[in-house]
Length: 585
Image (cartoon, rainbow, N blue to C red; front, side, top):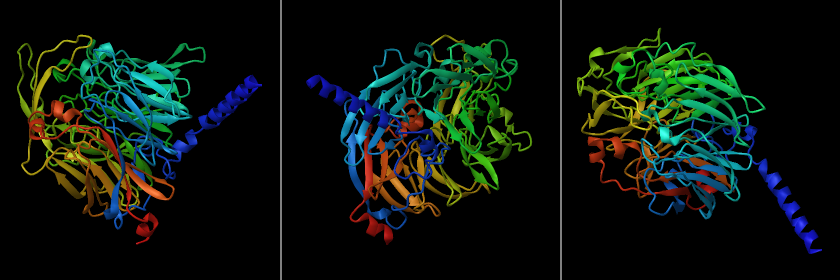
């Protein structure tokens, strides 16, 4: 009898798990714009708009926003915390530095379970030990690790369901971006552009981790699709020849896909930005160096490149093109907006890849005078390319703005269909940069350049800017003495939220930029906020913890903000008192 009861309990458990396993579906993820109770993908929606239809917290009630709970990641593993939380029912999934993932109860912040990835010695993350978030599918929560693995955990227990190696960390590969889920596939990129790696985008079966296709992002490398038998089928090249890469330079060409991708259900395409070509010394690799510093539109079923647009051909400043491509409707078209590290904001037809417009979103650009709207190419200022060192120890040094940390870096912007504005966390800074001789060595830094980041203004560095994509004008800005490194979120409550390195989460009127609310989280905010509704109450959450590239690579800027303290916590807010009453006022 006891055996039978145990059998019934096991069956019941299996039924419960099976029912729960269908929790997150493709349809749910693609309905993210209308789902106010969950946040199922990075960017809030797959197109990366970072806009919520919630309006209980609005320009009238936000002054009553107060902490609901806070959770500390604990231990000595602080460093940069760049994660966007995900909300699935009554659970929050949030990643932390050093490849950790926490499951928390959304109502109270109670820890349900924790997963700490065992990292080997010798990992080589260029820009801090950060992680930018996870993906959810079925009953899994999936995230990337600093040793270039992809781990799928059971949402209820934290048990490892599958684990796959994405690339060889000993060759300089790592992974920091949140995965993207499209039609049952988990689609990921790679980090490591400073180590002479070859960038790529991979797609795996989200339930099993089985590789479905892989697409390198350096011209000349093969792409492959994998059949049911697991054998690789040649899926074309990224170019018929490595024509834009002289000699064997394409073999260590960089073009990492370190910020992850977006997906637009209207075009049916996946968009990935690619990073700098390797090495930084552009004199060692004449040509455009496709497909580095570009936006790639990929077929999510096969991985083939449908179109590409290169924002900085023959990049000599480490501008990358990795920043997110956010799709939206404008003038009857589906268009993608991209605030590039190089200081220009690009509008590109999301279906065809045709450049629609390009204009500066920072106030000082020295490497190019403008973008030719007919050819799509920059009008370079030749004297502001770092000089060719030849056999000398150092080439001619130049001052460049923006710095290689960019007019915008990893901090995601937001777009509001209500206001028609993009909210861009921008930075005004420059750098002295020079080239040096370098040769490729597996696992070693592959720069061939030296640099010092410098200020260019006395009054501010960071500025949250409301950019009108139709006119190219800045509607308003809120400046900050430190560089902005945390993302933005817009809501139907006529609000835009963002964090500052000084530790504040802020909310401003989305149309005017008037700051309406702020809260000190105790450490710098370098992560993007999210919001959701639970039991009739709207919550706002953000991760706090200073770090990332600025304190590591920031030169004079790093010294300027050296007073900032590290941390590691999640803060969750709600309206004080009767939320429904406040929302109606």
